[in-house]
Length: 313
Image (spheres, rainbow, N blue to C red):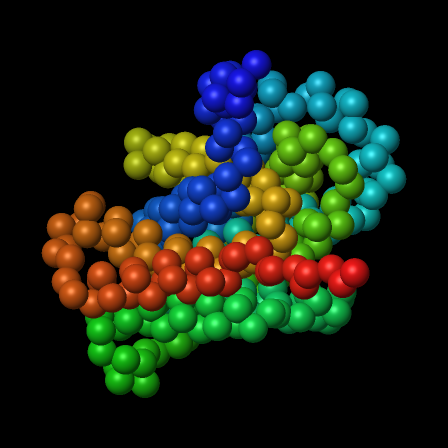
């Protein structure tokens, strides 16, 4: 069988599953939409309620496809149970609840602007836990894409950075990113189980960990109204930034590592800007294209596989 015939037999999903840059770009697009939808939901769906229902429904979505793998992988999951619970708490329960909480106190644009700090937290945790240092290319790439994000978010006027008002919501989101940085790094230590086993366990465990807080919130705050807008919000957050994004993110990190994957966080505000152009009627301007070019260049530089030194004879 020729190489072309072999390639032709590869299913589209299998091909996508081995394209880390595409997977991480899909993740960024889904998470950009999550920031917009989360802001729209603020004041209509309490943050713990939104987070709990998001992961509960995401768990129900993946369970029919994953239960056989869960049974097969249960021994490995049980052997690394503490780590799996930690990943569920950090990447599922805490991060997303705190993101929705922060959106009650700040604008979506602020969270999009803060998102590019995530690679710094990933680098910090990598250094602290595993003594893994950034390469020069990763450092340069992060800096380039961070400048690109600032160009986009500040509309080409970097001097307006001093006028940004960071409030309690911004601080909550920074703490959320610190927690997600730990999740990103620790996923490299997860047991060698099927991707569907991993997301099913973390989705289910993450939702279960939120139950006490969900019950408390039902008594402390007005309950969510069952209307079309809220149900559509729940559908979106359960399918795209949860099921689709986490499958893509975990696979992408597994293929190229946390440090090389982290710069793709910088695409979140880029996609957020694109969404505002497409859905909110904003018109593209020169600073959009300059910012996009800087971000994409930074992501390319930072995510390249390091060249190995030639072997000596």
